[in-house]
Figure 1 (spheres, one colour):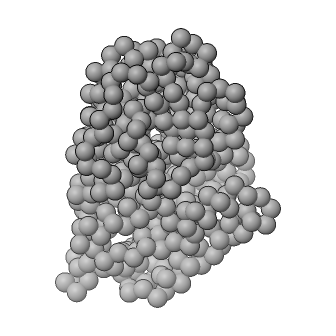
Figure 2 (cartoon, one colour; figure 1 turned 120 degrees about the vertical axis):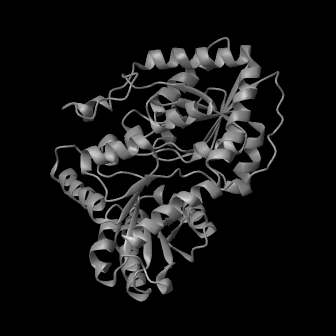
Amino acid sequence: MRSSPQAAKPKVYVASSVGIDYFFFLANTIRHGGRDVQELFLITEDDYRRQARSSGLTKIWLRIRMYLLYPAYLLVQGLRCERSSIFVVSSNTFYAPWMVRALLGFRQIRVIHMLYDLFPDALEIAGKLDRRSLVSRAIGVVARHNQSSCDGTVYLGRFLRQHAETRWGPAPRSDCIDISTDMSLYDPSLPELPEEGTLIVHYGGQLGHLHDARSIIASVQAVCGSELADRVRFNFYVSGAQAELLKVSLAGYPVEIISTTPSSQWRKDIRNFHLGLVSLSPGGASVCLPSKTYAMMAGGMAILAIAPEWSDLGQLVSGLDAGWVINNSKHASEPDSADPNYLDAICAERPTAEIVAEFQQTLAAMLADRGALSRKRRNAFEGVREHFCVDRLSERWQRLITAVQEA
């Protein structure tokens, strides 16, 4: 049944426990399609990063805000809003999408689940939970309800959708809509960098349990001890669960490592860098996609991805011919979801020595053919603007919101 003209465009509430860059970009993307949008969040990005690094009562307070106060805040907003409003609820508080749909359905609230990270899979891959544990099974119940109960689900990529629906069941309606970045925040011209001299490789953002820190560390150590050492420079603007491991492991190496900087400063700095280094562990590739990849391409960097070739990250880089993908999965092709050992297969890792050797060979090839690097930098810069700009993303969001509204 179609909505009445008066309810043709209900207000859209975009909700996340933490207000970070891509959350606000998501709200602006939906707003770009003519929707009335309100952001709902409880914690600023700066507060989250500061408190996540702390311990004791400060960290406990952060968890209380994320998992108790934020859900309560959503319910209050849902009771106060107009009937038939639409809530786009992210998965960073994993039970929030189902909770809003279950408790506010009587007000005809429609819920679109924005699946940034998949739980319990992310906790299992990070080594925090055993797949067979009671806690993991309990969170799995929530995952199934998120999939089946919400009016729509948005995935960040094709493989991420396939994996989520293979393990936790299909969504009533869904789409794959890239997370991307706000192109208006970047210089519209591709930075001109010298084609001779030092190759500057940059890692920016989170280095969490879902990233392949082991391969990054071993690869950087190998390059710094090779004949490439004088021709390649690494710098890291890094935070996250494995940031300290990186700092300790690369102590004494000629590598620049600093904490993450404000986004505005980062966007200025990256105009001086040639290559953006990103990574996902094989298991991590089944639950997330680093948003920084789009930002690096928008800033004019080609991408060097240590990730499964079959992952959404690998396909993004290859599809745009925007860089190089070093496969860190044991499997060259996507594991068969019908295989009884599928969950083990997607986590199976390629030997680190092979990854390191390919990493060195790839950098050596870049230094020998700087024209290829320039071409991939341009492909990244132009491709992200052509295929993942706000106009295209907004069209996708409007189609899904309209389908949810009219269902």
